[in-house]
Length: 92
Image (cartoon, rainbow, N blue to C red):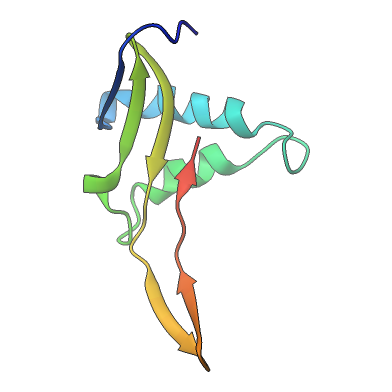
């Protein structure tokens, strides 16, 4: 990937979904376990009520999708004095 091209960050559009899922699959393939499921998680997360489409972003280098970040709604609870966060983000 030619990093001398301009980096653009913008919201993901439905037309980007398949390409972003492919980028996520390639980013996580065989990293933590054989194969991966992160791309499928992203696929089903978009239809979940906790999904925050306003925070569904992708990075473009030139015209090529280079990465993605998505956030679901999260909850912070205290366990004694320790904050626990439920929810997560997915980066690729």
